[in-house]
Length: 201
Image (tube, rainbow, N blue to C red):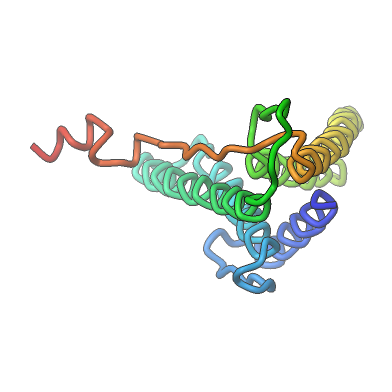
């Protein structure tokens, strides 16, 4: 099942990242470059670095210039994240290219890769919520509240994992078909963002 593979890789990424716990630490992807596993590792590393960028930019004492720097880095990182999700969808479009959908085949509300994207983010939520339950500088109410949230996140991962596996089974059998729409983000494109193309005049 792909969800078991993805969840194991995501956990490995998060553990690998927190060895150094540095946003700019080089990615040491252990998987072969053309493999799905390589894309999954890369995807979660991008998410993990962005998670910590989001923490930095929310520092209430951050210098405004530094805040703008991190906001722009987050924008760039989000574009890389989107591109990587689309690479994963391209993998599945190629894999199932020869499947002939049933006449009553249905389309899903999201593609397999965007569901896997949510699974990656969920792995980060689980890791960091678990860290909150291990703190020794907070009261019992904080620990209990975070444990309750952690239990819900773990249940959510179980349900989402099952849904992803079932979606891919349905695509493979022709019961569902997939389309991958490019996100067509406009704010980073100097030809589509009026602030950017206005500045060029």
